[in-house]
Each structure stands twice: as structure tokens, then as C-alpha cells.
Image (cartoon, rainbow, N blue to C red; front, top):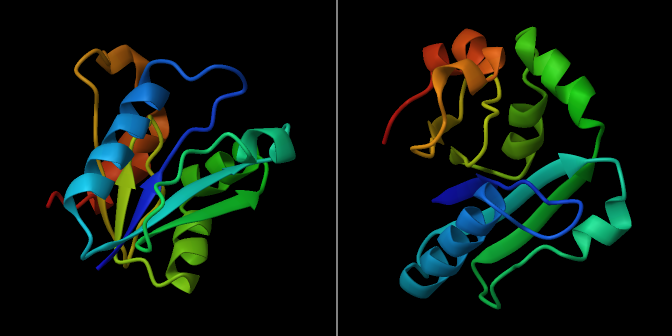
Length: 140
């Protein structure tokens, strides 16, 4: 199975969800050699510098897939039910999307799973999650 891990690549030092996600990637790489993982992100600011800071395990089943696309534009399109992320991930043969941040893309054919951290309160949840994500989310 091919699993896309949506990662947030920090501008500076990793903290919070970034550290948690890095730990998740390290943990998965130590226990799973069967599934293929696509470390996925998209942004435009400081692209070259930030891309160089991504942790990728030295394993044959982990790959980096970063696109130079403005995040606000993608979120706007996704919030209006235009599945930009799914289009990019289906081209890579992704079966499952694992969201590790506040953002859930509009998924129609790819199954999705969103990992909420216990500290997130309802007033902090992005409206796109409620509009696009919950209806199409399949919990595995």
C-alpha cells in the first residue's frame, strides 16, 4: 500500500506538530518495511531552504514528494471542493492520505485519516476540515 504523510515543513526550528510528525516517520521506518511512504508537502516560501530540512529515513520505502505551490491557493481551492491534493497524490499512486496537521484535503477516491493532537480545541480547527474533510474521511 502507498501512504502519503502530509508534513508541515517549518520555516525555522521544528516544534510541536513538526517534532511529533518526525517521530511518527522515524517510528514507522523502524517497524514497517512493507508499505511505501510518500512524505508529502506543498509550499512556495523559502522552497529550496525548507526542502533541505526534511527528515527522510534512509529506507527504500520512504520517498519525498514536495510541490512548489502556494499553500493559501491550494487551501482555497480545496475549501471549494476542488481536489488539488488528491489529483497530485493519485498521479503518484497513493492509496491512503495521513494528515498530520489542521488541513484535510477534499478526498473522493483516496481514503484519508487525520491525526488530531489532544491539545487541539474545536475553536482552532480550520473550517475546511468540517466542510470538506469530515464527509469524505474514512477512518482506518
